[in-house]
Length: 183
Image 1 (cartoon, rainbow, N blue to C red):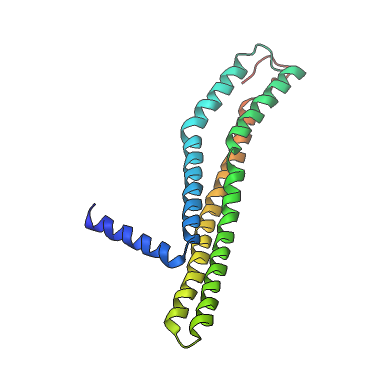
Image 2: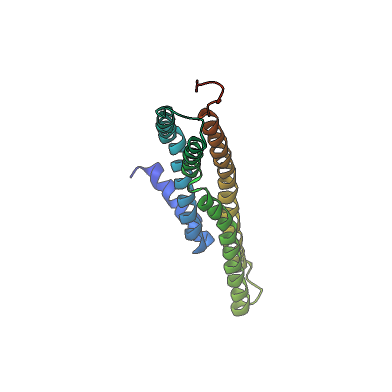
């Protein structure tokens, strides 16, 4: 391992240890959150265009596109595409909401440490109290940072999913019964 990489590893490890055991839960949640965000962007950029083209080809292969039955098939295609676009967004939203709660749990854990230190050693040792206060504030900060970044990307992904669903609905045009031409 290179010296620079070893120094980064030690810094991250020290940060996690300074924040207490709740920091590991926040780290795991952040990794899961960012895995889902990357997967959703991968889906939008790589997989989604192929799925849209497949649905368009299936729609265009129909000889008749203006009956009630054809409209239900179109609605089913749009609904299926929408489900694929919105998959995982509820879990993403739940993870974003979980991060500040984990930070709060870390705060409570740190404050318990401060009170325990005060009970055992009295209030005469500010260094021991500072470590407990650090243990209380670092998880809160980490939980908020992860939640804010996740909130931004979660909202962007929701916007893209809604937007692409509308685009898919627009591209799967119904025929005008007066004209036999369809898109």
